[in-house]
Image (cartoon, rainbow, N blue to C red; front, side, top):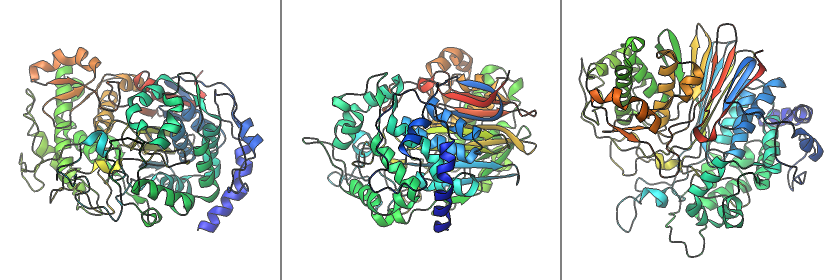
Length: 626
């Protein structure tokens, strides 16, 4: 299989890449090609790469038209995906191309040092498939890995634990790209990655979001010399309007393009990743503990994605598909929708509809915490949690006129009526970083892909000379080992995630593709967007832009200032407490950053991204409506 893939790459890459157009605003940079040690066969020449970058960058948050659509948080990444669609690539090709571009332009949220979840719809078969590319714990990890041996207590979460080798999981992104292109795509991996090689080598203009995220991580990045050298040129965050270039990442991506995933999971790069995890290199005088991890080259060589069936529920006559465990997103959203199915939200007043949304969210999170983990280690009762009968038993614990005392108990799997189980719940530690993209092509294929390196800035550790940050994904495990906790640390286990790439079908065709970054708030962000669009009469752009609140089974509900201003009075009679949102690693009090697409029965596509959050996203279509 590897030989066939290599021949396919070599035979097709040069011709296809020569025809690919990629937009960019940065001035040309010297590009030394072929890179030392990288076979040039099947890859574009230096001049072809230089010629590929050009043309204006358009950045509308919403576009309407035909022929294919891409939505993401970044203008260049969306343009990369759109160009792949224009040149005949399908949704899988465009999704991987967009994701790899996001790894260049959004390096603090995603990249080859992380992992993610890929959901794909093929109209020819009518099937929705998924790829679990979640990071895994190394074989040498122990249940007490997050405990400080000097005190026996967990390391302080930030910055001590997240900025460490022990927090790094075996990355799954490169394997996900290869699996997605091989199973669903029409173009070889070198063609799909070529635009990102261009972007990394030639650079992109720094915007306010990139600079502010760098400043948010300034003190952490300063602790790691290799990271500071890459992201803090001259000791400071890059200035807005300057060009950020990452030739080391261009070389790394080129090696992966030429050799496939083995360039990442075997050989020198794998050895360097393992060495970085085992021996975090700190700046002289740093007091950061940065406990070492146990990842080895064998852990990397043994990584594999899991290809599995999606979750599925029916809501208002629509088929909603999501990601099954190790992600909790599909189960939590599905359970909440099943609860809300019992209520005609469109007929409720604003306060009542939002109250029910918050209460359904709290119960979904209670059950997520009690029952969901890596299915290779935990017997997850997915069928029960997604059944309407279970949702009915949870719905009857909701007082339609008053907020519950939270945290609420999880539901009893074998209970009758309103039975609950008395199970302790571990707190969530997921950060609000991550990124998401949505793609639909002219044939009706659709991809919903959420990927991450966890915290904004990941572990803050850069693999020396390779141009990318490593994740801190293992901090998604429960910090304290508790017997019976489905999310406790175990070797080879995937930590529970909230990533929720979602595809909604109507009569067997794509209706919505939606997802978001945001850690544990991803679940409520996707849920609220669907409720806004399906139940509350909003258009897709309105549903994406609307102010958000995230109830995660806590006493108070985290809410954006705009939500508090608009709806606090409506929710006050129900006793719902709202607290302004915020996060340790970001200066913006925002929840999520949706990238979504809607397709109407005529084939008209609406690509909607955030108009404001995270600096605004970009939704593009192949042929705009006239």
